[in-house]
Length: 490
Length: 95
Image (cartoon, rainbow over all chains, first blue to last red; front, top):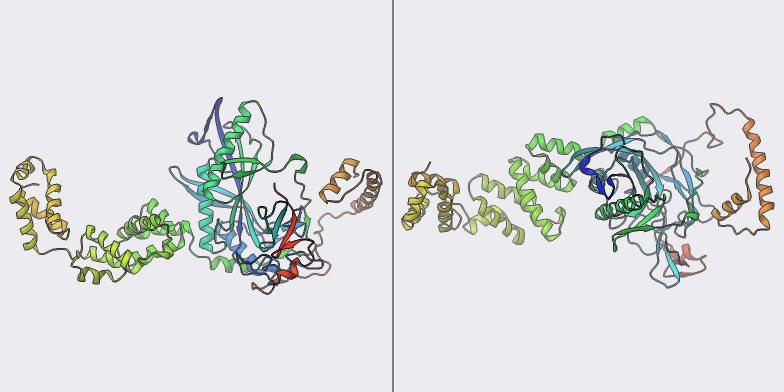
């Protein structure tokens, strides 16, 4: 909050510069089989009201019993956020009325959450690394789902999601631009997926963000904020912040003041609009849930969970840089998803780390992106890609032929070594054959030979001609050397 | 602590209880009597005493993570005044 103002982050208004201040509440669905307080399934996409127990439907006399796995996952997430784990936390009732909340209250944690302050290091494109402080993480129940477009005068309510465990992860107001906010959510999602505590699937609503936006003159106290509810894609988070900041600056520059309110982002129009009228301003009347005892565990339990945590993105990135000699950029591309990192390591095993990174990032990821596939659906396996890299390293094929080989393996599959053999793609290393091709090119272009003596950069043209003659199979290094000596260049 | 009539109306509204204007003064009196009664508890010195969460000293029971319930949508919606395809139907609520 008191970090120095970064002039590059400021927004130009009609009357001067403005700084955006953003804090986020991320709702992450806990990965578990059953719900937070009942034995009903959490499976997505089930028939209406089929994943509902009498507890979730809030039938009279039903009592909640906490799912140990959800507690375990919340602690593991807290550890992944380098946060304080509270050995004793409490559940409270947050009271409000809505048709998809049959209890009339949400069981949540108010004053004593399971996880306290932590931090997330975020790489922001073209900016560097920022430290985003976490205020808290608490466990709470999700609500059901209302569908409004099936009937002219009625809403349809499905309680399948009702009672599913959520982790609400609250950041401090440390973000200063839509870029930073997007990078923060991306990083948080990556950490959750590494931990396996949330699948991060935003399309299915497993990860949703409430974004608090305010603006101020640089150096001034925080302005009044508006909360944009339930934004469900990283791109929309960026758009919502941009729109909302401009809206607030517009009001303030016209001499108005910002009303603290809840707003909704409309992706179709790309704008935010007010969601609830003032007289319905929230009064949740929190009080301790008398159905639930305090949530308690000991430090040994936490230590055992810490022991079992996987290697997380920051540690993996540092290791990729030191172990494989990768640039920070390449390392961060590779570690963004755990599956990509594992794939890369399988390719890099026993090979040159940088060459492996180039092939995985440029060829494989490039191709996967083009076809909209993810790494799990890659037609080229780590073993196949490794074999292609080996063939280059052994001088069996040139880099150019390797790309053709990659295409063949991509579309037809098969063992790269056998393909090279059967289709005659082997690099020509026989000096006699290369020499014949070099001599033919020199003999056919006496004028160019003359020019090359004065202009050694023409060598590239000769190399190209020889490669053409040999169908790309001549070893480029050998061709280079031979041409240099025959043309008398150096 | 005591409540005024505006607060009485507000509490009723938050609890979705319809309260007529005639009822308000009488409810105000009742609520204030309750609050006065509760206020007497303030006379007890509870400095350093943990809030009591249970009358018996016990740890909260936890459940194993497994699907043991659900799968009966017909029962879930049986009491609802209006349903369709196992959905609850409610008067349209759009923000």
